[in-house]
Amino acid sequence: MFMRVMSRTIPAVLAMACVVAGLGAWARQREKATVVPAPSVDEVVSERTSEIVVLAGGCFWGVQGVYQHLTGVTNAVSGYAGGEKNTAKYDYVGTGRTGHAESVQITFDPRVVSYGKLLQVFFSVAHDPTQLNRQGPDEGPQYRSAIFPNSDEQAKVAAAYIAQLNQAHVFGKTIATKIEPGRTFYRAEAYHQDFLEKNPTYPYIVFNDLPKVANLKQLFPDLYRAKPALVGTPE
Image 1 (tube, helix red, strand yellow):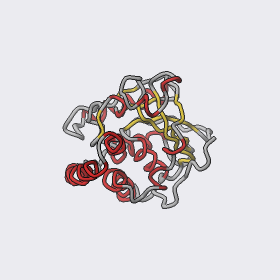
Image 2: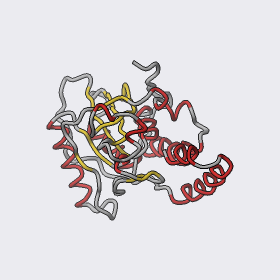
Image 3: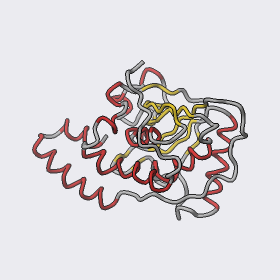
Image 4: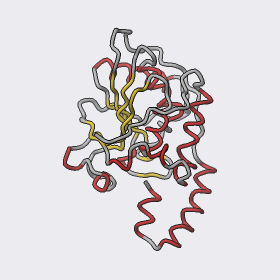
């Protein structure tokens, strides 16, 4: 993310001074959670016990952290979607020229939490869906807001929900989230997995991502769980 790239390109002392100043600005400006209505159209209830969707909403650390604390989610893996396999590496994706977005592959039990509820969390606490090709301090198409559906039904539900929120003027701005079907998800490097849980005092996490988890607990108390579903040992 921005701090990590910056710290590699300028002297450490200057980098730290910039980070401290920048974090103060981010803390003052970072978006608050937005209360959004549940989708009026959701997936048809079935006997499935497991389902997958891939969501992109800026830095994958925070998005992964939010869904790891959501009841019904059995796994949430950070990775890349939207580009080719040979460019699905952090250093390449960071150039903004690969077509990839930092994404999270979410495996969930639809008997416990519906796909529509996952989208409600996505639009309310996981990120700001009105920001185009950026999220908070991070800029570029790799930080875009996108839904990579795993089925035609997921795509239709997502499209209907975006239309619903736009028509209700929930955000006061047009939602920038794109629906990108037919994309392959590629797992990110091991050091990106469970980053929020392993690094709770890391400044970027403190200022940008822990508030998202706190908002999840506040807005969705019946779905929040204190013990996260961790990725653990890489495959």
